[in-house]
Length: 284
Image (cartoon, rainbow, N blue to C red; front, top):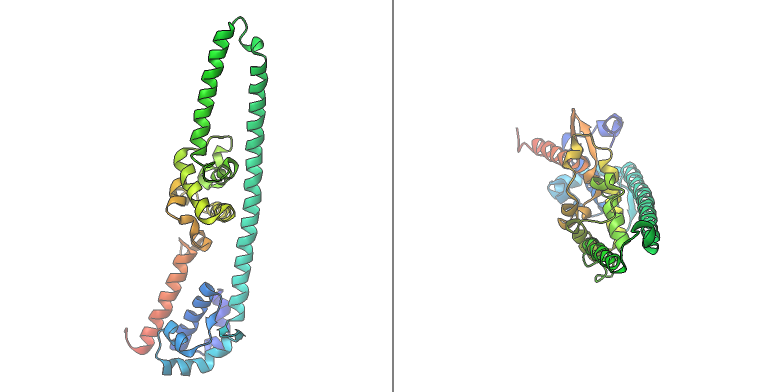
């Protein structure tokens, strides 16, 4: 919300403190839910007002919140702003997913290239292990196979059993902001892969990948010192942080102090409540 534009409206400027506090609470409610109920009793509860007081205030405030559907009202300006934010988040999610898949393709191509090089060397052992007996070469090959199997088991950690692909787990892991600098890393640590697999099993690949991309896009806008507080990869998925509203990951600067959008929304709601309490004489 633009405070200057909001307060410069002549109708808003004429509101009493109680009416202004109620209006702000309803705008905040609409931002969270998408609309407000067309029910005076519920509106009074949202505004922390007695029903009679809400009825008097509603004679003016109803013009700010026209009916938009059965049992629903909404402020046009807040509706448009909210839709713009949602569209922007979806665009960032799509772009983040596209970039994440591109990074994965690059990693996969490098892995395939390395595998082909190893395969060529193995197919012609005389060129790399000249003079060795057949028994020694066979022993080296078996040892190499054991090591490769151990590394792959560490990266899969049961993904096959859960019906998930190594590629998707790796794609999500490489999308996470703490792992951007590890684009060349092929084998995913078991401590990180397990929570990702569990998250996918709960909410699906697209949801987990989309939320990871949104978190990466949001943290990319943080100040350098704030990025020290990016969650560890395993905690982001194990503690269900990926399910949060992406607005909570955004930062805004108020009076030189950066806050999340969620903190700002709570502060606005508290301010509106305090204004209403002072209007009633509850607080002096």
